[in-house]
Length: 207
Image (cartoon, rainbow, N blue to C red; front, side, top):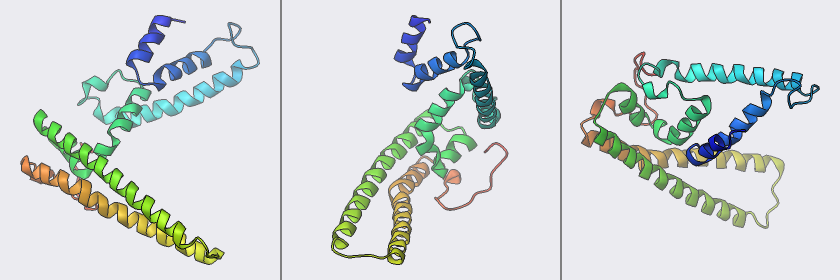
């Protein structure tokens, strides 16, 4: 084992990277070296199946971006997965995605939009978490001495789910989408504005 590489992974890579690296090295030990012969066939079969899935996802997610994103060429599936995890909240906003993929704005414009959506997402999650926590506390207090049958329980659950969805959608439009759209318009990117819930015709460059 290369301890220097392992230490570098712990220092520079995401927390899961060295663990995934150790897992991969263990599962690829050759027969009769260190892995018992009765484990090797199953391990080899599993790692082959896992590689098939990872390779498929790797090409499926990244094939259309190789020519535009040269820095992503040699990144592993796990590194790209981390990128998706860290940037999902930005790209789920249609206006941000349009500006990222359908045009090439100035770096300062991207910085301003990223700061706006980051602050807006923080506000959104804090506000909705507080609202739903207080709402759940009130429901618990309201039904504390009441016996509720199966059908009323199902009805209450459906009503709560409906309210939960509507509150989240409304809060997202007010706390996230509106500031992002306003900032995009301030930067002169009006043609890339897309309100949440609205459709927009896409080119072949947007997947």
